[in-house]
Length: 84
Image (cartoon, rainbow, N blue to C red; front, side, top):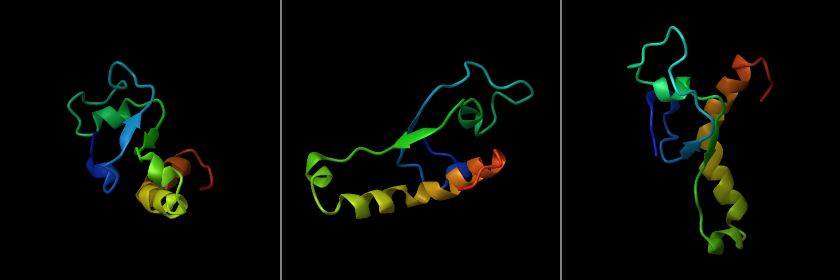
């Protein structure tokens, strides 16, 4: 798992997706957010067990779990001129 200052509160999530093999042109390879700058897309998740998946607590748990991602998604949507 990775954490970064630009994604405060979302450090517990695992991020995956396609990435550039090198930093984008003009970006310092040592930039503290270089892993995020190299991303072609953003996908994030957190594992949960079967007991939660089959319980009435699944929806409230998912809402509480992913709420910290909302500011990041809002930022990404704004950068693409999309509504969130």
